Length: 364
Image (cartoon, rainbow, N blue to C red; front, side):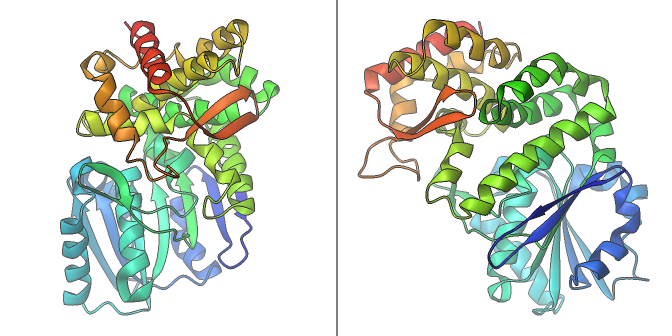
């Protein structure tokens, strides 16, 4: 049975539905939540071809105007160039304010389509249908949109909440092992943000995702989104509490930028989590016993040897341009205990370099 989470916000509340085959009722969802039926579907080209049968649900019988805008997805498409191309298409097809943009794909599609939806005609409806595990557990919810600029990830963007999020686990059947692992990066992050009970459940059960265990997958997606939603409800635009969702991400975004976005986001997050734990140890925020406990999960998921290609000084240079910084100082989100997160922590460059060196050795 599908599970529902309501994201209760002051002005832009919306619902998330999580299940299998929920796409079959797409028109009912649009009708139930009063979503505009003139739609542009911005979609990953691979998803379009792999799930043609599933996508037949978008019928002109129900939608008076419907077009697909297919993209060959890579991080470089998150650019002003692509935004202009989609906006030009919308104008050519005479889309007005009674439009809904439907994002079908992973995080790149969601970030890009969300940015277009937030800016076209000063904002049109947005529906997120994530097709990757990473998109399902994180990027499709929360209202962050963005494009990359000057080799900086998501440096240009908006906060723009979707009208509806539909998480259909059917899409997971065609994902590669690397895509599943990438999604696990965000899932385990939520394990550290949660409590001891869920953290232990995650350690025992995370491998079930690779065996397509529907019950475990639904629980992990649901718990991740429930936690994220509860944070967003208290801090929609990342003024304070929402910063905890960036655990491991100061390192992760720097890894991605340094390697020209040629690694999957979730891989960078997993390594970034380990780096943040080593930094917590450097700053005496955690002890050696807890360090090993926290690393037992992040180090169990192999991310390859991409860390051997990074330069510590360049990583720190990239960190200095992170959009979360204040007063030109690098700010870290660090773990003190499971469910206890410190934000805006400042560290010396030498301590960051040490954490990076230890992370490299961890994944040899």
